[in-house]
Image (cartoon, rainbow, N blue to C red; front, side, top):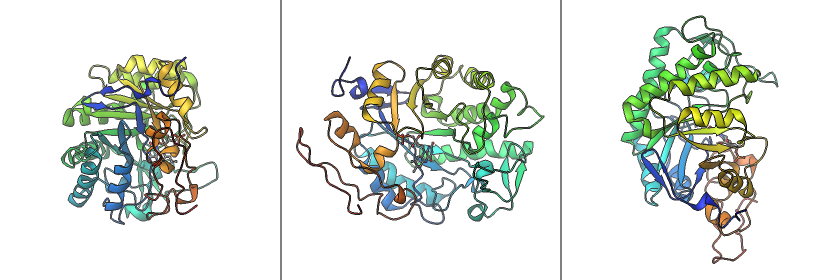
Length: 372
Ligand SMILES: Cc1cc2nc3c(=O)[nH]c(=O)nc-3n(C[C@H](O)[C@H](O)[C@H](O)COP(=O)(O)O)c2cc1C
């Protein structure tokens, strides 16, 4: 058995077109600190630079088109101002020799119409979002026409092009957590009767088309995809295990000819058949995160990599409060606890004011954030 300090987490990893200095990935996290028009702010550059000790930085979900905006102060990649704002972020992260991918997240039916300025949310089918608390996020939901589908694919391609111009090393397609791409995969949100709906194979087609088009544009070795098979988040229900296996097998068989750089998997049991089947079928490296129900701690992360279940591990909440998380874990130092009330609060508090542990190696001093 390996210990934390000798774990394979600290070994470098070649991931498609980039090289990671360790196998910890900053998990994509919406923090809502962009300007009202979606332009990334200097504060965001500071936040991501603080976390550049991770082997790979993946940004929060970024909208690839106006109608895909999910949240106020979510950053976008649809105009020149966005591109320039992101260039400051990628420069700041690259200064520490760390690659950075932009997560492209089209909200689909969970778009926020107050920020999209549109009258309706675009989705695979006209099935309005209602979560288990009865919360509606879209007043109206419209099934995408075949023209809309071409436009949606092109929006992802254009955002990927902008991402590269802004200095990103690649993009991650958000096909998890109930957003647009997963809405096509899930039988509960996709009732289409054309070539994009019905069988597992047809429900996988839109995601394949988006991934292939983006890979054509920037290279498959610069594209990752995030999936959460069977997760049942935001009403994108995938309750039938056999259907889940068939749908994700169709997706990754479809992409196998030209494997993507990585699959970022959200699943509570990384050693399970559904996860490892996807890993084999995809031919891509696998980044694992255990999901919202349990915080991904240092021992879980090391065990996932050392057991051979994953090539790398994505860490979310612990990285919010510990900008220097990889060093803390490697040297077995204590962690600061994140303050949930500031996850989406805007401003520097609970964002860039979590301090690094400046004690010399072997020390145990931990600076507390100002706001606690
Ligand atoms: C504040 C917050 C925002 C998040 N936003 C995103 C997001 O934009 N895209 C995404 O794929 N996952 C998002 N997630 C999920 C995380 O990437 C991660 O999968 C989840 O927090 C579980 O990992 P953890 O236990 O390490 O926190 C978010 C999580 C949190 C806590």
